[in-house]
Length: 475
Image 1 (tube, rainbow, N blue to C red):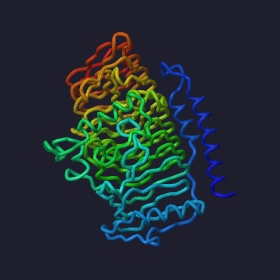
Image 2 (cartoon, one colour):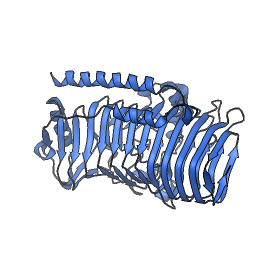
Image 3 (cartoon, rainbow, N blue to C red):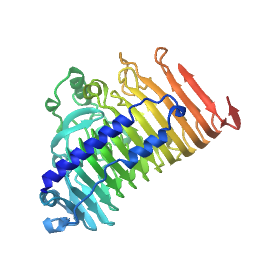
Image 4 (tube, helix red, strand yellow):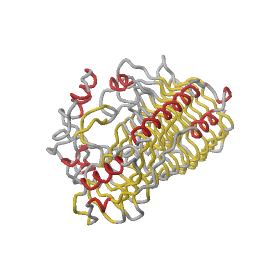
């Protein structure tokens, strides 16, 4: 069978599995007693399609790559990837050494594999990142290519214990954020200039077609690092990612993806570790996140654009991960308009005086969205700065964020959670009178030290089962 037919066949199989998973997980769960959500999680894991590649290797050195950290190797990467794909796929090998490149665009059936001492250095010249269909803060746009990008691909991977280095710092990409902590000073252009971020958001609100939302040069919207756009059956394993311009791992409209044993160490602005968006059946496991923003942030589009796309993120599984610095350990939102459900978090360690919250959901009446069925168990939390669990329908970071799209947050369950220092609050939950935060259950939770048990506004059906806070059993 020729490679194109193989790819098509795999896509059909993956689509069939997706239908089964969607049907099986479609029942809404209002309490753990009605069904076992962890069995649903196991079913998702068991039935997830896995990547599989031909035993063929294409060494980028054979396509003219030079490992001196100075020679631009964009063409060598692209030739190796295209040759590999045209021959039915296999492994594109990045040997030990430092390789400078612009954007890398992956193809179906290709595994980009880094040897242990291989380091890919990404160019700091924006011209090395051609305009592609991508997304920026939950809004689709024609903008700079992500540093590594795949669109409409099946059976694709990035593996190996080497390093992906975005080389971002306060002298280049990060300064575009407009943050004074990242080198910006008055008079320096940034994403915050009126013709940049605000124009994009306004275009989306007016329904401007994506192909007419052309940004790039002069607009200062930083590129994502690794983006799989409308892909299926994806693996990212073992790599280390440092110094990212913007969001780091960004599966968007992507299904059936495993992110395994990845280390993210990047403290720049908006340096979220992993942002699944409009995506389903995503497993994030055995990873370490040390970030300048949220460690993991599950997304579903911003405002009108999220409602236009209308694909919820669902069946997101986080296992055996370590969260160090970050705004939140596992976060849902704030770009959340298409909704999120069936999130499973287990066996994670979260600990840093620079980690603000362990579990967080953030939205508002401009974002809207239905966020439901979030199951968390077996967490070890050392120190968080603000709170253990924060559920906020009034998130406001960009000025006025109010509208007519009242969100829903319901069915949030924490079980077997141990916390040494919970910061200001064990639970901070705020809903609307007409849409309270509903069905929060804490079972076998122990918080040794926290300033206040909770801050609550419009919360319905909060239950504590065998939960101890500051040494006292909470009823």
